[in-house]
Amino acid sequence: MAHRSVGSDRDGRREKPTMIAKLKRLLQEAPIEMNRVLRGWYPDFVTSSRASALGRQVPVFMFHSDPKEVVAEQLAYLADNGYRSLRLSEFMAFLSGELDLKTPSVVLSWDDGDRSWFCDVYPLLKRFGFSGTGFVVTSRIVEKASSGEGSGWLSWEEVRQMDAEGVMDIHSHAHLHNRVFVTDRLVDFFRPEMDINPLHLDLPWVSQDGRLRMIDSPGAPLFDTASALSDLPMFLDNEQVRTVCIDWTTQNSRSMPAGDIGRRLRYVYREASSRFGKGRFESLAEQRQRIACDLAESRKTLADRLGKRSDFLCLPYGEGGRTVVETAMQQQWQGMFWVCRPDRRTNRPGDSPWFIPRLKNDYIFRLPGRGRKSLPEIWSAKWRRRMARNHIY
Image (cartoon, rainbow, N blue to C red; front, side, top):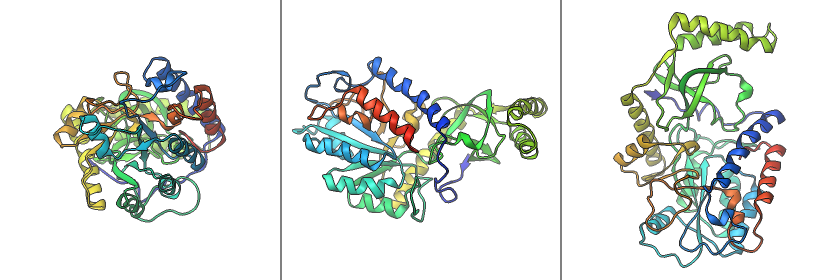
């Protein structure tokens, strides 16, 4: 199945999310993060009140589009306490047992490709003498650098400059970084205010005329979603039914109270799906081909744009499964990055390069060192930050 790039027609700028939207996001994310700590998914230095030296482990931290002052404080903490940042080639040598580290070390990784990397992170890494790894969504990087304030996508020229200088080693965060429907259970209908991610990375993608595209039409039916790289097959909702719902919304949304639209739309959906059918689930062969195409297109794009081979994949949303791992192995990728995992809390010599766990950058302050912060301090600062500004991480 073909897909289209959205980087050239949407640069990631939008109005700030409402306070209600930010509170809803916080209430969704905070329990998940706290539960991971309570269930022992994080390394000891995060959960222990008295952290000892790291020893033979290298934590990988993940950043996104974090405020400049937050990144600066975290890098200063690392520098003041004698930590070293590793490039992925060094990190892989450490995992294989070929590199014996004499200095406490970390890997610093950034996801997506927000242009704050170039404006804020790039100068900070040079200032503190660190290197980072940037996992970019290759379909979203733009040709011309955006201007002004707020979130927006990096340009290819900015990506090339950071990679060429060795300050930010660029690799793949997949080509589309998309969510897809994975059940036929109707949960809602699309409304523009649902899109609170500044880079539009949480909206589901659907099949339209044989191509994948991001949902952006009010009234489109919504079903349960997961990462397109998960093991769950994609539900291909009926395009005729979707068109009926979108057209009805366009014709009636201004003349009807908002509270009535959803109820009426469910009736419209039931009638249309009875007539045309709900849709179908893709076959295993279609799923494998879709995933293989995404990985191959991302690698090809990086090779064409940067003149280098990318061997490392960071999974969007930290979601994956056997299919994407097997596909990456068949395509001769060399390693895969996730979020925290219940079966592996940290990274030590001999660990597999295919299941690398990562921690959110807030937990840098839990590393052993002067000025170490408590978990309540870290969480309260993060939650205040999320509510005070257009910031989702």
